[in-house]
Image (cartoon, rainbow, N blue to C red; front, top):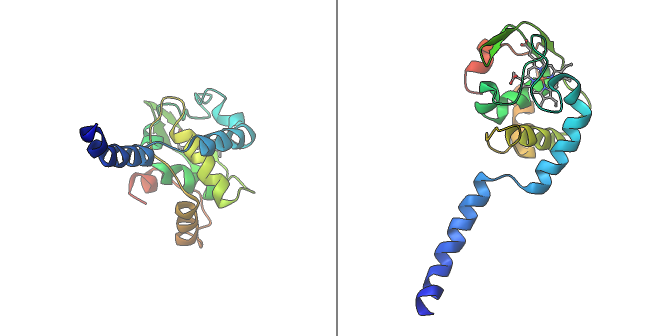
Length: 150
Ligand code: HEC
């Protein structure tokens, strides 16, 4: 009994660490609804895209780079060429208009934790900081730019 009590704080610390790595279920649920409105036509319900025009998000090395790639694509769009899972796409993703920063964080977190991906969590503050940093940007991102850290 005494030992069990001593272990409690340790378990609490471990639970907190696990929470950080795992996305909040409510955020993922909100993100899924936004995905269904704003990404699904191109990236498809399965996240597999429609090669050779729309690239997959499922198992994408670009999603695996971290949430800032998707945030930047949503804010400014992306223009090819880009190689995703061995296929080269030379198309154009237009900026996704009309989403609030919290909604962008939700949909990006959904994508980062769906379709077999495990690429972290985006917060409203993360999106706000990226929007502010690139507020003068008018052109879509290129793969070469997204290669570099944000
Ligand atoms: C009108 C079609 C369209 C919509 C809508 C769209 N995308 Fe894209 N997306 C593309 C295309 C096309 C590319 C590749 C552009 C290129 O050739 O450089 C792309 C690239 C990407 C990439 C990087 C490459 C990859 O496959 O991982 C991410 C991440 C991404 N989109 C996420 C999203 C998210 C999240 C949404 C919804 C909020 C979204 N896209 C909405 C067409 C679209």
